[in-house]
Image 1 (cartoon, rainbow, N blue to C red):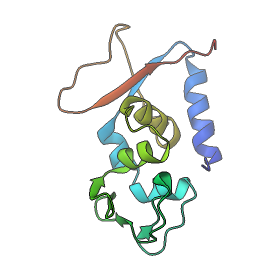
Image 2 (cartoon, rainbow, N blue to C red):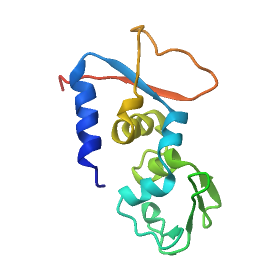
Image 3 (tube, helix red, strand yellow):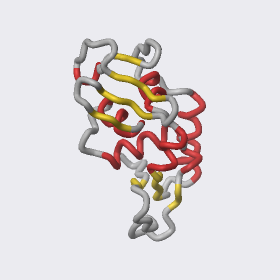
Amino acid sequence: MLISTTSMLCALSAVMDNPNARYYYEAEDIKKTVTARQVAIDANYTINGNACVAEWRNGDNPTAIYFNDDDGTFHDFVKDEHGDCIKLYQHIHNLDHDFKTALQQMGDLYCPHLKKQVTNSAQPPENPAMATAWAPVNLEK
């Protein structure tokens, strides 16, 4: 996957500003910023018109995946599955059962400026209307 230098520097800068920070991203913020098509492009998938091969599942049908640019989603005609940019990112990066990690990685990559700081060390703010992911930053690995 290609990562723009600007995105990488912004994410690194945000972490370096406060290495002990705890932060999270809201799924809705990411979905407003990124499209499924963009996720596929960044994973170096070849898109012809609005379609591509589902390479993450070793597909070979060049029209299996359709991108809807009106709402930023995708549809997999072979699996009869519809999803947003986060679901496609999960598929491509083998994170199908790890929504929080996918959300964290996408936030760091695509929109570090939308990072939400956790003010209470126990948990991020509760917002039942939106799914969120958060993680402590630990640079001592």
